[in-house]
Length: 138
Image (cartoon, rainbow, N blue to C red; front, side, top):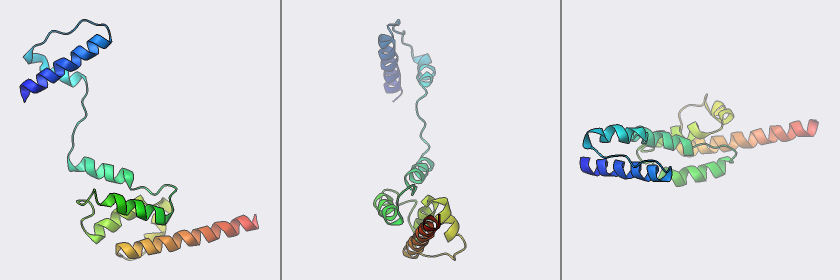
């Protein structure tokens, strides 16, 4: 494995040197790690990285609750460790909602996923009615 990493580092350095019309670096095993780290390779953090990625895709943004729920359910199958129970699934769903919807659902007692989706949908519809009435008054 070490030889492979050394060779890959050497190939990377050679490729970059050729592109920059620079001198091709000499190779040596004692400098391999140091040279490799100069390229600042991405770090792997295991499950924490998966959780971060999950949080990134689980944002409602401008989607309606129906659209967000569809997207959430479609992508949730790839994050079974994060959404292994109904409670965890509900938590992740609520985390991705727009802040005003999270705020509206916060005082409610713990509920299952289907009930949260229904409550969020009703809250969204009520918000739309309020916005329409405000627009009509203005």
